[in-house]
Amino acid sequence: MSISFEGKVAIVTGAGNGLGRSHALELASRGAKVVVNDFGGSVDGQGASASPADKVVAEIEANGGEAMANPASVSDAAAVQQMVKDTVDRWGRIDILINNAGILRDKTFTKVSLDDFNAVVDVHLNGSIICSKAVWDQMISQNFGRIVMTTSAAGLYGNFGQSNYSAAKLGAVGLMNALRLEGRKYNVKVNTIAPMAFSRMTKDLMAPGVAESCKPELVSSAVVFLCSDDAPTGEIISAGAGAYTRVQYIEAEPVYIGPDASADDVSAAWENISDMSNAKVVTDVGTSMKNVLSKLPRK
Ligand code: NAI
Image 1 (cartoon, protein in one colour):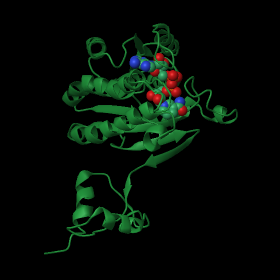
Image 2: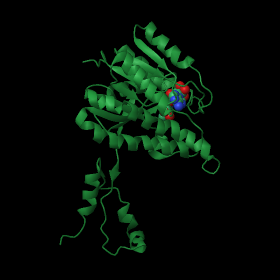
Image 3: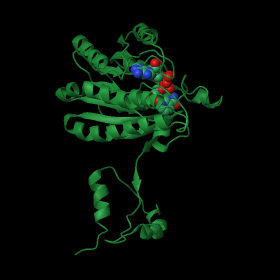
Image 4: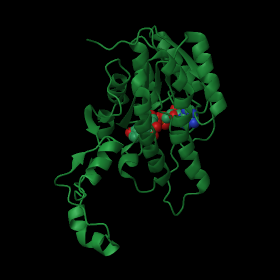
């Protein structure tokens, strides 16, 4: 059965280029009305132009779809509110939000300025917060919503020279982890994509040969699945070059040392504490606490 978004309305941030453009085209080709949001700056977030978003809208319309351009910066709360209002005024609802907009200001932590750190956090993390918050009440009142965050292997695992980006990208996962719980009862599902794709952002990082396999459209296939009626919630899918992986946290079996455990005791037990051979997937706070408390001696 093929996934359809007939009658649905989507906002895709940073949709003037790369992955966002591809997500927007794919959603529109399946019937969604799409807001193509993009402030149109450079990879490091300088400058602004309406033309990347306008071009994608023209592409969607040329394919017979319906779209409107929006030039808001995702970190400008007032402009995002206006985007949401314009969307609801025109199309009456918002079913899908893809938080995709992103910039890079790579420098080691020694060299990065707080301005460059904050600029990256502002787009990736604050932008995801601002846009999610702006559509949240609408989705709850509709009893339907799909939000997709965009993380990165750099966020999940850390990357040299990307402390700002890594912190912001894992923050988006934290946001998803809480929103999936608050949205569940209202059929608002929140998931995260960890993409790998050739784009202007990654063109200097990818070897020829790899680049050709890493088509943004292959990431969009996972993103569009996460926007569908049958989407799971609270999942992270790592996607690139046509391969798809589920990412989860695991916790090792807790080691109970005792009520007077000292730093020396923890040091002595580190080999056991760090032994992952009986590690288990943990997806909620309750299970994590229960695992720890289950090791306490029974009174
Ligand atoms: P891209 O540079 O081609 O596209 C990003 C778009 O976001 C641009 O069109 C830019 O104008 C827009 N944008 C930036 N700041 C904005 C703001 N404040 N408000 C509105 N729009 C804004 O980059 P790409 O590769 O398509 O990246 C898309 C997302 O995927 C980003 O969040 C990126 O961090 C993430 N990502 C990409 C990977 C890849 O392999 N391409 C790997 C991991 C994560």
